[in-house]
Length: 235
Picture 1 (cartoon, rainbow, N blue to C red):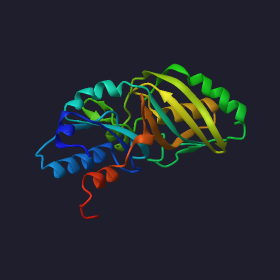
Picture 2 (picture 1 turned 180 degrees about the vertical axis):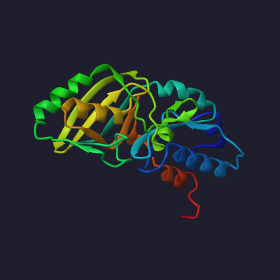
Picture 3 (picture 1 turned 180 degrees about the horizontal axis):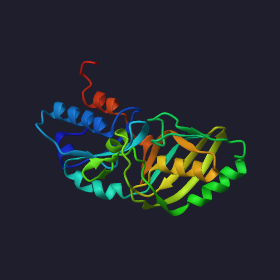
Picture 4 (picture 1 turned 45 degrees about the vertical axis):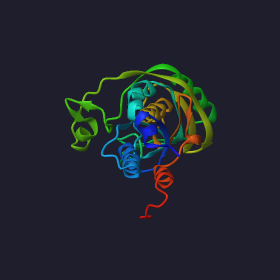
């Protein structure tokens, strides 16, 4: 069992973020447990890379002096698995918003799917989704999007190290991606659908690795609380 000194000196905690939780909620759950366990008024704690509420998987949470490592950890390559649903697009590029357009998928063969992934390997230009937490003029993009305002978003250069289709059950395809910091998998799903001329949106996403850290070694925020505070009343 880790001590108060362990957390203050610095830990990298591997957390498996549940579906619908924000990354902020996950960090707060850990912070609450650590403060309560050791009767601390405050402790430095933060995560190395946000996951959307509709995504699950690996969140690296740094405590104490290790919060200085956050920037370094954010720069590491990330691996994701997930599902793209072809034949339809959404304004948010995922399930946060309703389908706005549908497209034919009859032409989408297995060969075409595998061939099209090759277009996205290496350095690519990508536009972040309008429904994202990026800021423009001090305001988050999703705030403009929800107000129905058009915003010019500059593209960014990201690197896709690996993009493979692991299962096909039309209209859903399962994939694995290894990519650089700053890559939006939602944008990749949207661009992939566009390249296929069949439209597409991200319907599930799980982050499996950050650098050498693997989600197989992670615990959920509630498991972490239970381990640290076994006597707490279950709510």
